[in-house]
Length: 375
Image 1: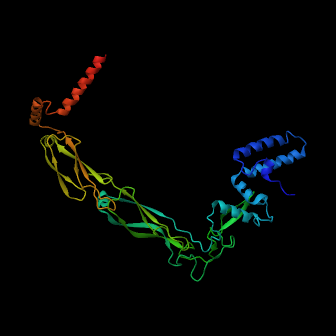
Image 2: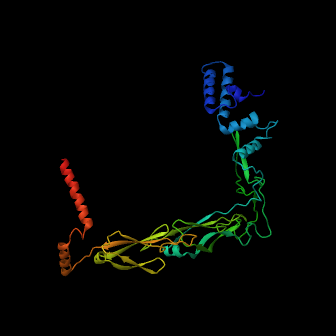
């Protein structure tokens, strides 16, 4: 006897929402529950139908399968317009939801791509400024030279996997569904090697340390990633290689701090130089020196810009700027004569020689006076 339509059993349309479906199920389940209908065989059968229908329609994937194939989606065998068996049906369903539209075996013609590799490389700020060619040594998997990546011993070859028939996948039934998984015999390759290569034990690749040359362009920043295509691990049994990614980090510099393309350098100067003015020599990252004129009365924190003396800009002929930040150094360990001279200077100083000090304490006086007036 043919089964009733699940939507009809629950009294809903095929466009029913999840909320409406749940509401209808609860109402019918309470109505036909065996506890409310003791000894009523028809109510018991109806209750089972309601539960079966809700179990299918409340599950998104099962509902989609039912909408496409009807009851045959959940029965082994059966004819009509559906799949010949449950395995074929589930293959269609998984392909519809997760596939790329290309059916067929994954086996002998499918080669596994090698893994991408990461290499951390630390360089100095000067090297980031000029750029360089760096030689690195990377332990990686390379194609076996003995078997040329086939994994098979000379004179032999692989054969189709007897477990999966060359598909690389096997199916196992789990309740209503057939679950597809990687073939345990061939590891998803679709083929097995009876006489493996002695050089790589059938893998088609061996571990070696490779020496590579990396071109680091001028102007790279901390965290820059450089990709070397095809320099990653070799693929299994002749598969294409992965890529190698070089991640750059730049060591802190003893003199310069970097902000993008600009450089900053803190330069201490003496008290007399700050007061009387003069010139100082400062270093630049290219190894040359530049002269900076210090005006009279220069204070700590004063900044001087040297245009075009900063960092290289990546893939450009432009240059950043160098900013010199002055730090006025207070003298220490004074001689008696130096103390005497400073004390004499202090006695003769006025608001005009210390305008910042006079201005600050003037504002303090006004502030405290205002507090006193409001009290």
